[in-house]
Amino acid sequence: MKPVRVGICGLGTVGGGTFNVLTRNADEIARRAGRPIVIEQVAFRTPNPECDVTGIKTTHDIFEVAANPDIDVVVELIGGYDVARELVLTAIENGKHVVTANKALIAVHGNEIFQAAHEKGVIVAFEAAVAGGIPVIKSLREGLGANRIEWLAGIINGTGNFILTHMRDEGRAFEDVLAEAQALGYAEADPTFDVEGIDAAHKLTILASIAYGVPLQFEKAYTEGISRVTAEDVEQADNLGYIIKHLGISKRTDEGLELRVHPTLIPKERLLANVHGVKNAIAVMGDAVGPTLYYGAGAGAEPTASAVVADVLDVARDIATDHHYRVPYLAFSGIGENADQPPILAMEEISTAYYLRLLAVDRPGVLARVATILSEEGISIEALIQKEATEGELVPIILMTHRTREKHMNEAIRKIEAMADIAGSVTRIRVESLEEN
View 1 (cartoon, helix red, strand yellow):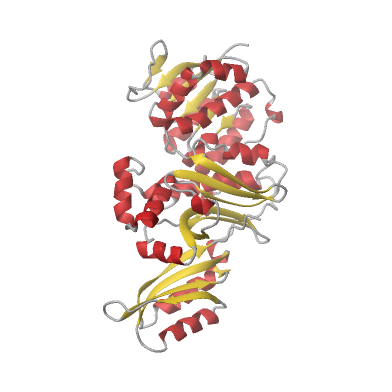
View 2 (cartoon, rainbow, N blue to C red):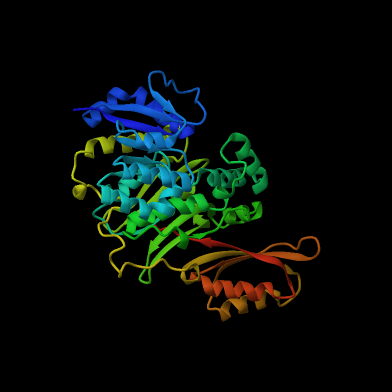
């Protein structure tokens, strides 16, 4: 069979890894695909010293790759939103199949891109967009196809997990560990996307769409970062039998779908609680299979390239298949056509348990008033720790509550913070049991 010819756009970390995996494992990949997969052209701004492009066409113009009549598959690895969107849509219009690792592109523009691809009868593959080399998209879309997915929860940003791991193991402050992550190259100079949850929200949006068969709706994802988590919170969570992880969580409820990213206390015995450093992991609960866990490297040159090349291989296998018989991009047929599809719930309508930390003046009646406010909002206390007074006669109080709606907790916190005997803001971290049976 004739070779499948690939054009790679971007030769940075992931692009370089993809180039090297495709060339190094060419024979193995050809045996799996049933035909050779050949790199026809590479577009890059700066040469990658790790990649020998001798004998391969090169260009600085990514759109030259999208227009090259000899190319079957365009691999988009430039990142970002606007230029990447234009490149992908141009490739599709020119009848090219597309492989991308760009989670922001898929989360924000995926609905438009998939519609364009469907109309042209080409494939858009994006396994590497979520959790690097972990094949969670294929698992959700195909391996768990018999299941009604009840919930999924994931550590899907390695930078945030690295920071929280070292805060717990070494008792260090967020800012201190973030600086180390930047020095090691785990965090960007501007770490906002990672530590404020935007990157994780992109990935969660994709996973939820595949899990529940709904359109991509990134704008409805609740997003909260870890920059306000303190060493004190990490220590107190540990004392209570929990570990703080920055999770992306999506659940199916009778009222709609939850789509949220935030710091979360989870019990120490849960599998996700024991995923450390820069590793990623996603737990998925299906009604038939029960709990499953997908763990591995969520970033890096060759782990991500592993997923990119696997997508190229799938395209090579399916390239002659009528597109009406291919696996749908987001696992379900007719997404967006059914008006009865469940809505994404606003965060204030979601119910969780809570960890609260506050500083109170050391005088009688303060704790009783806090408990009264919680009771007025229908919130019951599960556990309470009152520590020794600090300098200035302020007493740290730690509360764990039973499950309640977010809007009731918001109102309770507003009333507590208005008390004259409460200093500063109340720290609130949500708690999830993530039952595995």
